[in-house]
View (cartoon, rainbow, N blue to C red):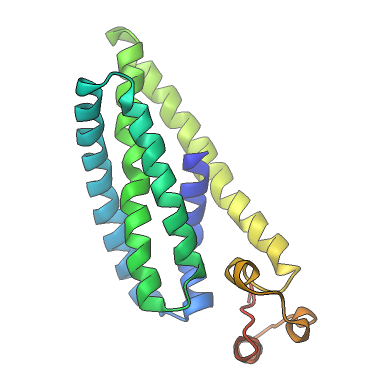
Length: 193
């Protein structure tokens, strides 16, 4: 589930930033390269180190650490989607990206602790197959499907959490950027423009 939601969200973050915060693609590319690439890698490494330390002091804490990390990351990810300020949203997004990537190392370490050394290659292959099939295969499709379903309501998920839908926006289906600007003035961000 973590891989599906995480990979699905990452696949659509650039689109979200363009539609909601009107960021240029060049800035989004640089930002995501740093946040997802560098902070994600650091989070994965740090997650492995911390999970191993917790496991040494208290057996069974490796996966509890992963669960706690996910519980910290998800509310912050929701704050990212709900925030109107581009700068604050981008700063908030750094935390769930770094924290949310901590599951990889501890998951593999937990599996390796449960199988014989001769079975580790096959175990890793099965895990990577499942993560890629579910994460990269179903994740973006699920998030895209959810975006299409929200399109029927004409307002993005961030507005549906914070205020009721504006009736004057609900009947519009924009086909170009001027329609998007009109609806933005009415405090309704259109999904799928």
